[in-house]
Image 1 (cartoon, helix red, strand yellow):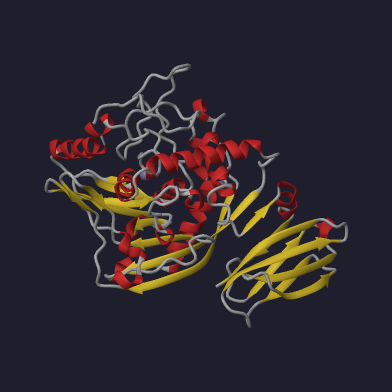
Image 2 (spheres, rainbow, N blue to C red):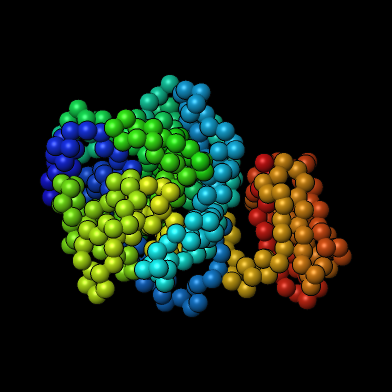
Length: 435
Ligand SMILES: [Zn+2]
């Protein structure tokens, strides 16, 4: 069955006779792991399903804010692949806007979908940038009947890449030049790939376990930032607004493509019988092809027939068309962060704390030394404690001024956690990134 799917994909690309962009190789990656670790696909789907059930049983899990530390590996050969810190910081900002629904173009979400979209309550902080110069190329290898092998060696120092940093507690993102995939002699650019949570703790006994150090996201360097253009022959200039990484992080947190990746879809025929496992995304039979077609409606829905949700980050619509996750997708990602990836967030702020945290403004963050925390009027006296990434208390003081000044110039780069308790006993915390 899986071979049939791959064969179908190959035939489609061969028939199309021109370059196709394969925005992401998620499904082919899952297929590769299925071959390596039989049962992987079902196990991953079950892991996410069980996480969602457990999430429902917890009391009031909504409203807390998850903060995820991110390590960016820039693995480069040509100088242009060694992207600037500014582009990386822009990418982190795009992630934060997307997962907090703070991007300006949320106004473009059509009224059909306004009721189902939401704020995921997930934030990202840049913990480290690792730069590795290499002579190695990172190419997905396709064979006629053997599926696709993804270039996971970008995640291995010994093979010309960069080893993951503590993948249980960090989201690792590798940025490199992903080589096009060649299928029947047709070359198709690839933008990224990621693996879903596999529930490694619960992996069936006496079977080989997928390697933890491969967890994370790989994206092509041309997609990273908030305002890039990727020129692809026969396709055109594609606006790159950092949403490839948003999409891949969606996979990493348990989301599938909105089309569900049905076998027929690989032939270019809408496959409406395969679902993405999310109740509030409309049934969609094909992924969009880098367009922004609001009239697209590949499947008739059971209840009210909605058009395809081209606004969704998990479609393949053009990046300036994507602006939303649905509440059903958000529930899955939050369930993954309290289930199979529960150790990933550096910080989980309760909704009450998150609310009080909004009464203070921390700036600049990241900073190479001095940070300021400007507090709202009612919080202007109390005490604070600063902890390093290992949870060690490194500074503390009382304060009676609206602004707290923190000088970390004599301390190493990394994450720090500030806890503030005001005179009324209200607590709030912030994550500081010392660059
Ligand atoms: Zn994808």
